[in-house]
Image (cartoon, helix red, strand yellow):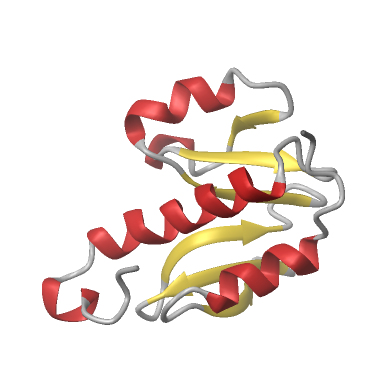
Length: 119
């Protein structure tokens, strides 16, 4: 099922509901969702009306092979993918991937910072 009914604002609300999440605007209006000060886990508007986030290293190539999903500019080396609206994924899959991105970033933080951010 395509996720075209998911709006960028729906995604923003979901991102901000994750533990410790905050938003910021960088690079001339790019909406950045991060934790622990400056550790990004999702970005809106990196390329037009787009959404980018981190995925598991071993799943990266499988994701970028899917229609409507590609490697994120400047962030692909860190296993980030990007997609434009309407998003090519359903709501549940998209939410699960963003939540996983959040947890991948949390997992790289010092143990004392991770407390309270793990789902």
